[in-house]
Image (cartoon, rainbow, N blue to C red; front, side):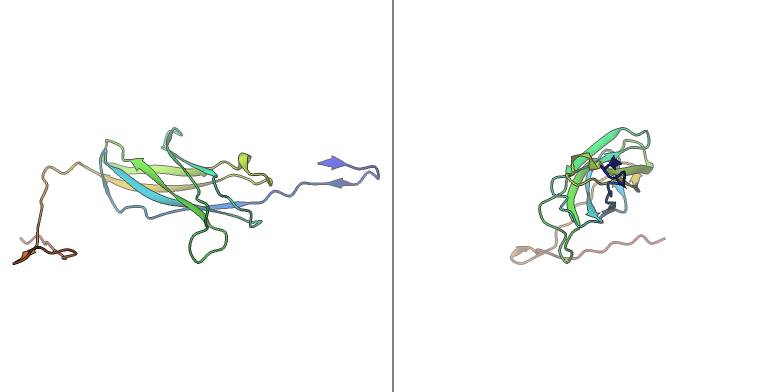
Length: 151
């Protein structure tokens, strides 16, 4: 708050940031790498290019980070986004994570934002099955293979 010669006061308006995380895989094997997308939008329509989004584990430790890109998400005019690569914990279970954006680096005053999300961590597979669909000329690209368990 600042004062003026007339005694009036003005308060700096801080913009809000909405933060979203999507493209979270339904399950990840323990210790495997995966990516998520994170996007942020300023209530004032400010460009958030280059802002850092960090991902915290359940203990508050930073486990990954990424930068918001130069272009808004297609079909929007202000949802700046980026991909963040993470490594799944070694223990199976639901990993509780939080994406957080720090607004201190933004020129116009903004409040930071946080968005919790979870990822299912499954045990590392014991076996690997490789299937190649082939015809007379060799492997077929983009073939769909379905498997089911009976009995």
